[in-house]
Picture 1 (cartoon, helix red, strand yellow):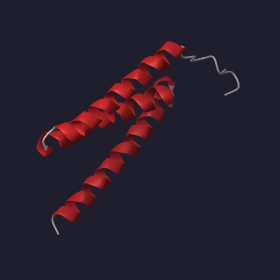
Picture 2: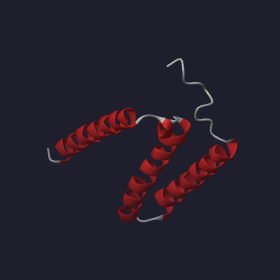
Picture 3: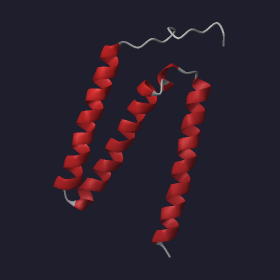
Length: 96
């Protein structure tokens, strides 16, 4: 722990600006998809764009890209478990 410094994975500001621009663009796509498309096309579009945005935030702003594979695996296992429980919840509500 003490041997690691804050500069071990210093990210250039340009990377943050590009990721921020991508997030703004994807937010615009979310708005267009939510308002402009038919409901049958909007929901799959939103379900694709939202995880892409979350991945960008996790990888760059939360520095998950620079962590060890074990921590990355634990985060994805936790998110996968959450998705499984939410899927079971919605399936239960839908088929009552």
